[in-house]
Amino acid sequence: MKKYCIVFIVLSMFVTSSLFAGGGVQKLNPAVKKAASYLKKKLPNDGSKLAIFSLHSNMLENFFVDELTDGLSNITSFNIVDRTQLAAIAKEMGFQLSGEVSDTEQVQIGKKAGAQRVISVSVQNMGQQQYRFRIRAIDVETARLYGAESFTVSDPVIDSMLEHAGAGPTPPDSSNTDPPSSNPVGSFANPIVLPINNTWNSQTLRAEMWFKLTPSTTGSLTVETAGGLDTYMEIFDASQNRLSSDDDSGSSLNAKIEYNVTSGRNYMIRVTDVDKAIGPFRIKANVSQQTRATSNVIDLTGSTETVFEITAGNSYVNRFAKAGAIHLYSLDIPADARSVNIYTEGSRDISMAIITLTGMANYLVNGTDAVSSSDILGKSTGRGNANITFAAPQDRTCYILVGENNDKTGLYTLIAKGAR
Image (cartoon, rainbow, N blue to C red; front, top):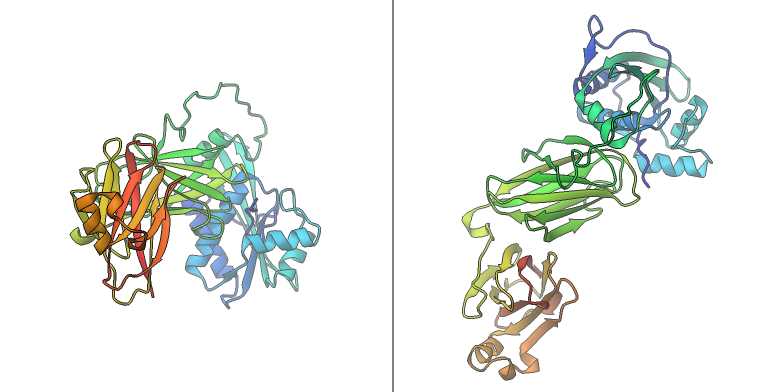
């Protein structure tokens, strides 16, 4: 399981001044920005390498580390040590990042990672839904203290994180005896509405987290996660047909899905952790509107009498509207493509056959018995999605027959790619 600590973070009980003019309680995101700005002013902006850890490695500290790392990366020229590298070094040195990490251990890990500075952060629950965040910046070689700050944060985002995860710093004298909701926010029955605006949405992952989105335009949806978890993500249609899934296509071990969606339709996103970990993560979604030529959302009648022309380099969403439907596509292969890869995605059990121009002419007249083996460029009988790679024929044209092995209805995606 990935560790959350990307850069070096040490708990400091030493407080010099408030980040905010005249003190006061802040929301989480403004606090992160001010913390990053403070460190930018205090640390030499010389391209040095930073290591960040949390003292207790609890959920709120790890979340703050993630946000602070992004903030420093966006406004400075610092190089941030990757969290997986820090975790590997700590393991090699016999240290654990899942519990309290001492100042000495943090400095040793940061030094071995090649960091010149270490940033320490801790969180203390002050009660009444207020939290004290503390940061400290230290030079690895000289132990010079560049600066230390503390600030108070109160934000519904934190309350939601703790409510759903049951984790975080324990307040001095608080208890919660209310029974958990049968349909908590983020469950399948009560999904979180995910805005399609390309901005990060901070959440806390439990066993699973469900999101709902409804695109206002037809186009290519990109939805991805960020943070220290090893996320696995799936996308479903409103009928709970799984359309696509991903594990590690995003940054580090995060998930990322790109899928063609239709305006006005509801889609469900399920996020889990491969190691069943609980903790903070972020998710965002965006839809790139496509031109008419590449909108690629089609609706065939299910008869081989209807031929849909497709092009290499694009994906096409289609639906088996009735049992036993067979979809027929024609593909003009690019002149520079030596081979072609055609495959499907989704939860359907697909059978697929690639047939030459001559073979298809015989097929349409006399059925499958008229197609010789030499006219079949590739065949897949199912057991899940189909995937066929074949050499481009001389006439640069082929036909694709797609069927559902179990005679079920539902969506699938057809993708064609040419290779030089």
